[in-house]
Structures are given as structure tokens and as C-alpha cells.
Length: 190
Image (cartoon, rainbow, N blue to C red; front, side):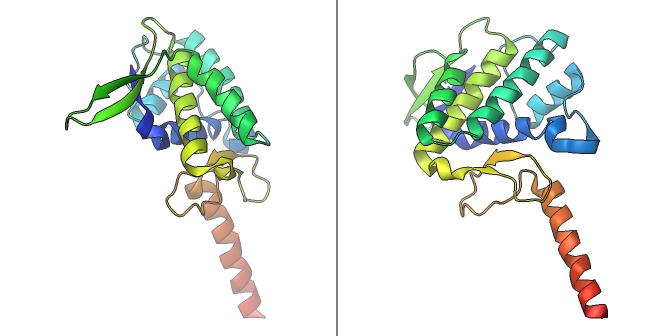
């Protein structure tokens, strides 16, 4: 697999979305990656075509461990801690960066992964490069905890405006907006 360094938003999004699959974040909904098939769907949903074999139970366990590590990097207190953690992830399967031409002939930095690297190691490299790029381009202030009451999610805000507040806007954001709407209706009815 070849990971484009300029494509850091995709890697940072994978990091955020992977953390959001945790039962810690999902609460009553439970485990978001309960099977190798669910992991395969997660990877496909992010357009990730890894060199590793298709997910099996062992790969799923390793990705669950990677999810904890990823959360730890996003929750760091300082930029230096985030960079150190992301470099560990990137180094799991990543090799030295290379400069290659893209389809338009422009030079682009890319990080190849080691041949035969396990799925979790390749995914760690994608996430590590994404988190490093996010720190460099956007700053550590974009590594955030979800603003929804009771949610334990964390994410990296790679949006242009930098105002994202929820780990999963379609779940946490909707829940907060519905609660606010209902409160307004109760207030208007009085």
C-alpha cells in the first residue's frame, strides 16, 4: 500500500471513525466492529485497499487494540505527545517516505508499507500519517472530545472551518439538536 502524505484528512478521518466504533463511544449500540466482516465493511467504506489479507478474527483483535492506541493519541495533552504517538503508529508498517509523480505528473510525498505487513499495522500506518498531517497542517487544537453530554468520543476535526463539535455528527449532533428542539417546544408551550 502507498499512503499519500497530502491525503492526511482521510487518515485522520479513519482514526476518528475507528475510535467511534468502540463500545465506550457507542454505549448501548455496542461494538461497532463485532466481526471480521464488519471490519471489511469499515475498510471498504473508507476506500482502504490494504495489501494485507482479508480480515480474520486475529486481525479484528489487533484492530481493536489499535483503536485504543488511536484514541490515546487523539486524547494527548500536547502536540509533542500527539506527534510521538502518531509516529509510533506510522512506523508500524510504514517505510521511509518516497517522492513519486502522481497521475498529473506532479511530485508527491508518499509512504509505502512493508510487504507482508499485517492488516492492523497497515491501518496503523494510514492513521499515523493522517494524525501527523493533521498536527502539521491544522494543529493539536483540532484533536477534540465530543461536545455531546454523556458521550466519551474523541475525534480529529479536519473540516475547513474547524468548528466540528461532535464525534459522530449524525448520532451525537442529532441527539443534541433534538434535545434542544424539544426544550424550545416545552418553553414555547408554557
